[in-house]
Length: 132
Image (cartoon, rainbow, N blue to C red; front, side, top):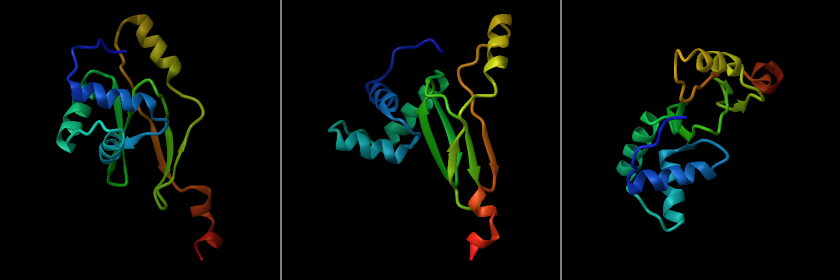
């Protein structure tokens, strides 16, 4: 994991909330969650905090149907995403764990986080009967 530099108050609030989240969340979702917890931050501040935390390797993001979702980098998940209905299904295992370990042992690359998202059609969207 990345070394942590001194964080702003906004970055600390955003990171603490992301650590509690079980699923990735949008910046707008973070805005609403922080407001409901009595810890309001402006949306621009949230975006700046997310970008800074991504550069530190503490937050990861993924885009899905025009929306970017953020999560704590140690909450490691990969997804199968349906291009028709937009459903994202988490994969149970990470196919890159062995490769990550090889890089770290060889000291050739310090990996903060990685993402994997596969796109296609879910079972229901493949079924012509379900489309009627």
